[in-house]
Amino acid sequence: MSPQARMEHEFRIAVYPGSFDPVTLGHLDIIRRATKQFDRVIVAVLNNTVKNPLFSVQERKDLLAEVTRDLPNVEIDSFRDLLVRYMRSRQAQVIVRGIRSVTDFEYELQMASTNRQLDEGIETVFMMTNPKYSYLSSSIVKEIAKFNGPVKDLVPPVVELALQAKYVIPDDSVGIR
Image 1 (cartoon, helix red, strand yellow):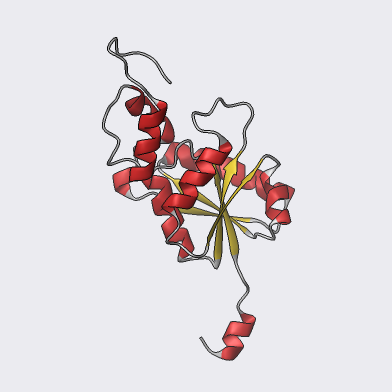
Image 2 (image 1 turned 90 degrees about the horizontal axis):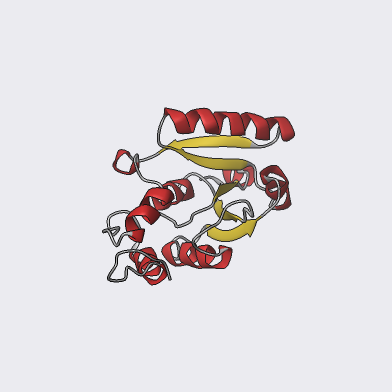
């Protein structure tokens, strides 16, 4: 990049928001790909008081920090405000969203339109999920882990261990620790 081009290059900050309860290989794939498109990617854990998460916000942030530690332009944060307000506070211009299906697209398009209505300066970039993760969701991972099923091909190893620590399958095959 020439010095003039470098001076003209706008530092692009993207936010990848989500609950990440827990982070999956699908999430990690989107994060890795986003780091190649933006100067900084803020992975922002939504502190949604309506949901009853398995992992606390801090646990989710710690897991995300661990699985992205090799990505120098990733920052892990959390928020509980309107996304566009959070974006303004972080001087971010772009929302990154992963799309697995037409259903995801319809929902995300509605959210992108709403965010655009709230702040015309914020763009949403849709990234198609790698086909091998198109079925994957945090809910599916938790359901499998709850019954002591194999999740090693669905989540990073540190997340697999965290799930095993959360779920205990006693002899009668029910229960959570």
